[in-house]
Amino acid sequence: MGSAAKPSVGSTHSALSYEKWQAVTVSDDEDGEAKPLLPSRKDPAQVEADGEMYERYKALFKAHLKGKFPLALRKLLARFIAVQHRGTESSNIYRYSEIVGLISQRRAELMHDADALPALCELHKKIVNAAKEGEAGVGDVAQAAPK
Image (cartoon, rainbow, N blue to C red; front, top):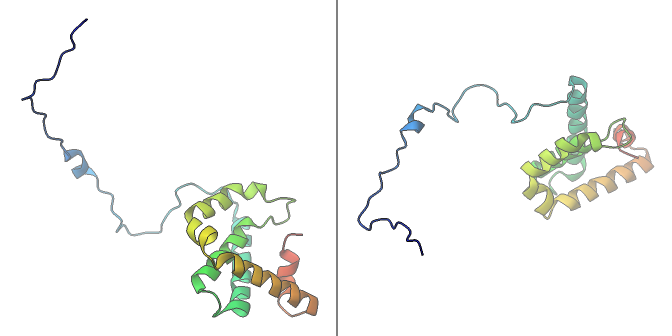
């Protein structure tokens, strides 16, 4: 049998040096607008359409569910509806990266908050009932909703 070299018991290792981190000048206090981690492939028209849809649903959440659900949740759900909307396409598959991105960033609120699903269902019921009754301001959203 060959004998393996054993480290000597009394040997010491040199301490780690963290001097390389002294040259890093990145700070969370930087001025300027925050930039997304990944560049967006959305064209300006899609960004504008998403913004309009977000504002419409935010207003609907406010009109129908204000006081029943927290503002932060209502705004998040309005953003989720806008991001996943298929627009004029037959499917929202082309929105996959945006949908997954939003869900991965806000998973706890979207998937595990006990109020998220009831808030979406409640708003859906309000929109459907208002559309049946011909309520003003809801028809635009009902027409924009996926069929």
